[in-house]
Length: 414
Image (tube, rainbow, N blue to C red; front, side, top):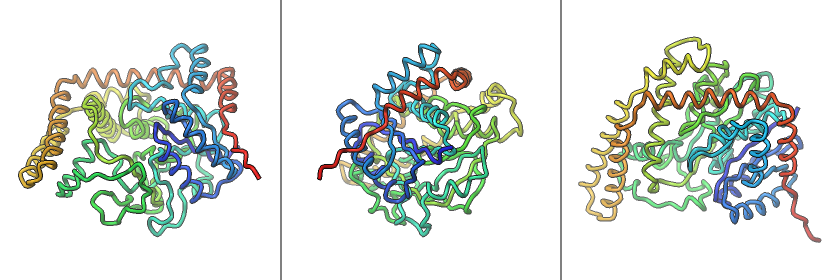
C-alpha cells in the first residue's frame, strides 16, 4: 500500500501554488511512495502556467498528477455514462462551492489505495519549520505516529490569518478593537509568511493543544485522514463543507478527530469586497454547522443521516447569528465615528452595508426548508458515492485517466 497522497486544490493563482509546493518540498522529505495530486480549477491560460511550475518540481523526484478542467471533463463523461446522477457529487455547482473537488480528491484516494491522504489548500504555508519551536513537519510525523489507526482525521494546528468567513474575519478584527487593521492592504499574492509576528493582531496563533487531543472537527485547509471507504461520507455542499463533513463522519462512522501541535500557517487573501450573495451563502453554511454540532452533541448514537436531520432541523436558528452581526455593525459604526480619515470611513461603510444586507437576506430564508434540502442532497450524494466506488469498471476507467495526468519532468539540457 502506498504511503501518503497529498491533494492540493488551486484556482487562478500560479504564484501561490508555486509557493505551496515549494514549501512542501523544502520542509518535507519526499519519499518514492508519495504522490501529490493538484486539482486545478484555473482558467486555461493560468493552467498552462501551473503546468510549467509543476514540471519543474518533478525534476526533484516528486510525483505529481495535474488534474485540469479538461481531465475532469473526461472523468465526468465516464462517471455520467455509468451513473447519470454522478455530477451531483463531483461538479462545482457555484463559484465558491468546492465540495465536488474535495469529493474528487476523496475518490482518487480510494482509487490509488493510499494508507493516508492529506488535503491541503494552495494558500497554506505548510509545515514551515521557522514557525514555533516544534521542528517536525506535519506530513513527516503522520506515518509513524498514526500507523496503527485506521479510522481517523488529524488536523494541523492552524495559525496565520484565521480560517473564517468574510464576516468572521471582520468580527475577529473588531474584537481586537483596532479599526485601522480593517483598512490595511497587504500583498498576499507575494506573501511568504515571513512577515507574520507572534503578537500581530492580523494573525491567530496556532491552537494550543497537547500532542494529540480529541476534537470534533478540523479544517481541510490542512488535514490528513485514513478511512474505511465502506462507510465514508462524501463532502456535503455549501460553505463549511469540511467542518460539516467532520461532524457527520464522526457521528455516523465513528471517525476519531485529533489536532496536532505542529504549526501550519494559513495566509489567504485579506479582507476584500465579496459578492453579497456569497456572504449569505457563508452565513447559511455556518448555521448548518451550528445546528449539526448542537444536534450531534445532544445524543450518543445515530442510525443514519435522517436521524441527524430530524434533530438538526429542530436546532437550526438564525437568532444568535442576527444578534451577533448587529453587534458587529454597532461596533463598526463606533469605529467610523472615531476616525477622521474619509477613506477609512468609506471602507467601514462598505462593511456595514454588506453585513446589513446579508442580515436582511438571512431573515427571508426559510431555514427548515433549507436544512431539508441540504440533507436531501447529502443523502443522495452518499448513495451515488457508494455506487461509484463499488463499480470496478468505473474505477478502472477513471484510474487510467488519472494515470495519464501524471506531470512529466522538464528535460534539462547539458
